[in-house]
Amino acid sequence: MDDHGAALGGGGSEGLARRPLLGPRLPGPRCYRVKKAKATLKKVLKASPESRGALWTELEPELKAHEQIEDACLYGRLEREVGRTDAKLAGWRAKHQKEVGRVEGLIEKIESLEPEEKAWLAKVKAVGASLERHIREEEQDIFPRIGKVWDGARRKQAGAELEEMKAGKLHA
Image 1 (cartoon, rainbow, N blue to C red):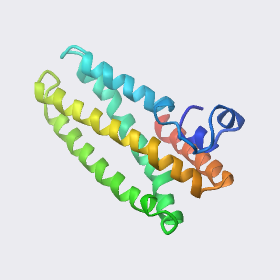
Image 2: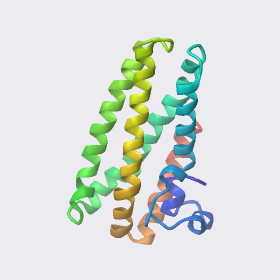
Image 3: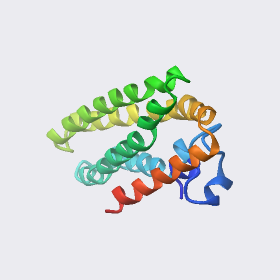
């Protein structure tokens, strides 16, 4: 288990032994799916115009599934449970959803273009830059805050929920 769920405490003791529970950091770049997405994005950007479309087709559903799971299992619950405790966390879901909207807009534009076009590649690069900023903010600010407001039992519960939802969404 190498995802947010492991860092949150889901999936047994192997997640606990590898890294602290939501603090000082969540998995971010160490998260298996985040690493995989970043590697696939690099492949897309380096691929020939003829082959990058197929790589993008592999990556795009992963990005959408990850966002949906993150929102359902983590940010939506944080907003409800700790909104009054931490103003930054209270506003994070709205900011996250706004960022997702921008990325979805880019994805729609990507889908309307051909992978051989320079504009297509520029939009994919913009998606990558947006994801990098998002991951950096999660790792440097959001995840450490979560570690301060959720106790170990709550983090473990959230981790288990993340893993269960990921297993259902990504292996269906």
